[in-house]
Amino acid sequence: MHALDAHELYRFFLIGDDETAALRGVSFQLSAGEIVALTGPSGSGKSTLLACVTGLDEPDGGHVEVGGMRLTRRSEPERTRFRAANFGILLQSGNLFGHLSVEQNVRLQMLLAAKPDEKRIGALLESVGLSHRARAFPTELSGGETARAGLAVALAADPPILVADEPTAEVDRDTESGLIEQFEARREAGLATLLATHSKALAQRADRIIRLRDGRIDGE
Ligand code: ADP
Ligand code: MG
Image (tube, rainbow, N blue to C red; front, side):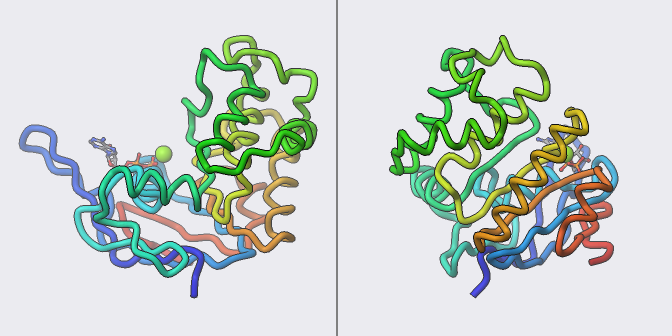
């Protein structure tokens, strides 16, 4: 059984009379202990695919299974519960609640996944190099700190599957290598990681690369 199994996903967007086929029959699997990099030009469907596999968006065709259970075409509350239990998600922005400190953001994510663990908060912030910024609010963080805080939130509940959309797009080299270390630690721990990325350094460290072009898989 795969950690994640995407079957023939389709997603269309209609704006006025213009239809964009963002996904046109995308299938792939992600196994435990694997890092998979999703690459492809801007507009090729990477973010749409990540949204569909995590249940943040519903595909127009096809379905997604997580740990052997179907995620697609369930009610919003069911998808939310399912997502909290199975996924850590790092989006390109909007990963932190602005009225909560870094530490409170991490704690909230643990509570949502019903995995409160006060000791883990400190260890997690230390592992992303943010111990000294635990009480800072999102507006007080630099770009690199924001990315690392977002990662701490995504990792808060030690999720079986981490999904990250361009996690290293706006960070310096040191931060990038710190993030890569986190992903590799997940591989060691037998957890699955799916990354959309333009970074060659990051894609090279993946076990497998899936290339998207115009909503289709162009190569693996
Ligand atoms: P990528 O992440 O690879 O840059 P996206 O998944 O964001 O690509 O976009 C794939 C295609 O779908 C693009 O043509 C984009 O304009 C379109 N698209 C994505 N989201 C929406 C949306 N919410 N409404 C309309 N079109 C969208
Ligand atoms: Mg994108």
